[in-house]
Length: 423
Image (cartoon, rainbow, N blue to C red; front, side, top):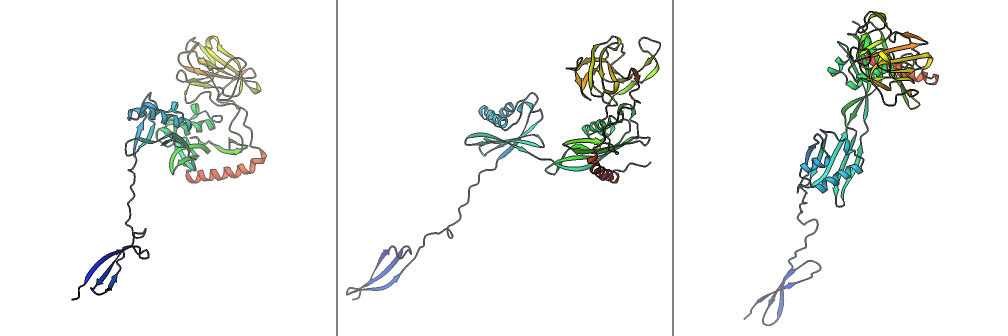
């Protein structure tokens, strides 16, 4: 009787096909291979293996830290439960990168980043739109980096008009306070904004607006300006760069920096003018007042109207504390009733135009804080508001053509974008 016995034998290493199964049929008389079946199980490859999902670290947590009054960076970080050692390391890294942490002001904001465990890993501090410092944690401790942003300069028009005072345009938001001060400084040898500003005066400017990352930050320098008084007088200033100097010239190419400024201090009112017959407020009677009195708060800085040499600085009878300067072409200027003399201003010292030489006071025969300002030329007192001082130097002949082309282009743009009203 035929008996069949099926035996299963595992085969290994069949030409790299993996494992298989051989089915044998054995009879009593003779073994005979009935059937051989190879069941192949190939090992997984890169193409066939199931994808392994990468484990991403949790996102960083960021927060804003604000510096308080009389605060330090370390103290601000310690309030956020950052260890003392880490806080000092962060401060050191920022200092090494060039940050001046002693100048960090109340209200300054810093961005702090923490990892998933709440540990600080980065701190960013921007003292201005043009400068940023970053401190980052690494296996070797904290390191700092400095990043500078170049401003994107765009020429833009600014304009305004006077209602009660020049500061109306600042209060209205038409121009910044700094831009208004720059405008006054530009024309201060031509025009006394203290005495001569009138309702209806208008101005228009082309300024270098400064942008960072496409966002407006601030106004830079004025490149062209015109100021028109209510009676139709127009003053023009054009900025021109030559020999690494940026200088302002009038429409005819004469420097706007004259030998004398029109006023020895900023934004005050005239309390008494130049006259040969004025009732004296203290001594009585009618006396000459060969000066311009500028009423101003005590302590207001007073500057030299021109380059010169200090001839006298100290008390001078009824003039109180006085500074007397000698200038070219026989001019002398007197600054009376000061509260004190500026540091370094003494007999024989040289001073430059617009250098602070003293501060408004009420010393001597004075009824209140003001500056008594006088100008004397070749022994005779003259009215500072009407004196025709020496004109500025003209633009060099070699630059004349380039200046005229620049002036025409800038003034044409002002006229197109901010025309003065004809009414």
